[in-house]
Amino acid sequence: MTTRRLFALALALVLCSTAASAQSARVVAGERALPSKDAQAPLAWRDPAAGASPARLELSPMPPERILELERNNERLAGKRLQVGIERSISDAVAPLPALRWKGIDGGSVARIEVYSPDALALRVGLKLRGVSDRLELRFAGSGTPTKIEGLTSGAEARRLVDDRGLHWTPATDGDTQTIELFAPTGVDTTSLKVQVAHVSHLVTSLRSNFALTPKIGESNSCNVDTACRVGTLGQAFVDAKDSVSWLLFQDGGSYICTGTLLNDTDNSTQIPYYFTADHCIGSQTVANTVSTVWNYEATSCGSGVSTATTQVGGGAQLLFSDYAGDNSDTGTDAALLRLNNAPPAFAYFVGWDANPVAANADVLAIHHPSGDAKKSSLGRQRSQDAFLTEVGWLSGTTEGGSSGSGLFTGGAGGYFLRGGLYGGQASCANSGNLSNTGNWDVYSRLDVVYDDVKQWLAPDTQQTFGPSAGRDYTGAWYVPTESGWGLTIYQYAAPTYNQFVMFFIYDNTGRAQWFEMDGTWTGTDVRSGPVYASNAAPWGTTFNPANRNFSAAGNATITYTSATTATVQFTINGVTRSASLQML
Image (cartoon, rainbow, N blue to C red; front, side):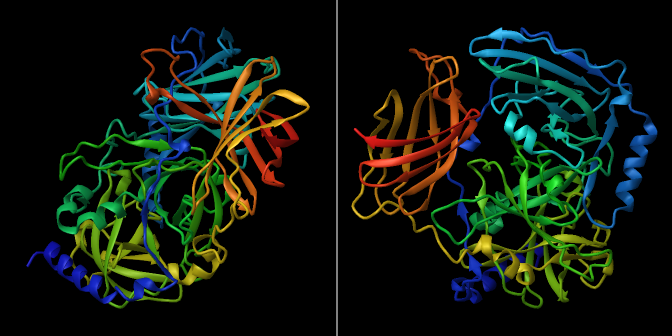
């Protein structure tokens, strides 16, 4: 009987035997992601005509010995994270970056920067910014896919999301040139803005090139199995699990990749993007600030060698928990839990988890990006565990550099459940299938061991039970009696969520009308708080295309309802902070 059929039979037995335990408080099923304003696409340039003459920075060719050094570094790594980018100093530039050239457009002004590193397959740019307004917008694209805008960052985000040197790292863009567009809305002083390209990460791998540079970067070994090959035998539960896994890119003295997993929590009224990986990947907040995740990088069909369309989500993450494992994994689990700052794509899945010990000899599944390649899956069996780690051997597939932090799953009633993340090991394709060979073993962190440290996020004691006082419906128009011409429009949905659609109608610094949407949650009885977004789209008319609409962060707001017809609002929108007393019309 084939390994695949053996695993399918074992999985069926596991599904039956764990049906009762899935009701445990330490076992949570997964759920599909809901659409979010944070995941709107595609983005577009503020100046599609590219009329602004770019300030261009060119670096000298990359010395070949630095590529060889990267390859040797990957061979030496004890863990299974993979270096894919080399940081280059601005001293490598052929000439200094020229001054920005600003061009006036409707609503403000734009300037562009081009950064070129010869023979790079992709780039990230480390920016040092001074005099940056919260309202500044930065957009990014690469010469490999020039029409694909890989991210939109506000000035506030760019100042906050910096590494330990104060650098804000742009998203990765394919090709040897990255274009950065800066948009300053009307009223923003561009003369005080200082932009310095301080470092450039020259990536030797890219999604567009299918990661094909050398056999060790982006081309995983032949025993690894495309996720598309497992769908027919493992079904929808496997599809859900694979959709929770993404490629994890970060800066730590160079560009590195690991793998991470999107986790569900016990609060059915929220979808907070908790993300599980390894401490040796993301072990500090400054590294977490540089995180980008790449979703849906997998084969279109079994063995096709062609990837589906990918989605990159930048914006960094909050490091909630990490547990240093030490050089010999004798002091901790190597687990790390993040909260992504931006929502995952709508096709992602918040996978379930099981915070009980993995049973002896249990069948296990790993989903990961070996060597940064398109998503693969490995089937194996639990061999042993110690105080911190679970050891597994592989029946089919293996792990490689880039697999670090990837999830270990077991099957159960309700799907697959995450049990830990990859710390490291000696496993390789050469020994796959031989459970007695130490060269076929890997070790994973134990979710059951770190559960008490992470349950405050994954299983909060207090669920989201807030909402309006009994009988109150705040639907209507709200205004400030002493300040005509601006206010809020609120629509309140029915029980049980009582969610609200809130539209701010206010004026910008020039007195021109603007509107903003509040995407909040109930944070107390009669108290609603959350981010505020600005939106733009194609001009209104008979050919209006709603797909062109996109959102950008503009601030935050809190509405406190003091009666059925009165409230107070505090908000910061585009750098302006206000508080006011409202009443319903």
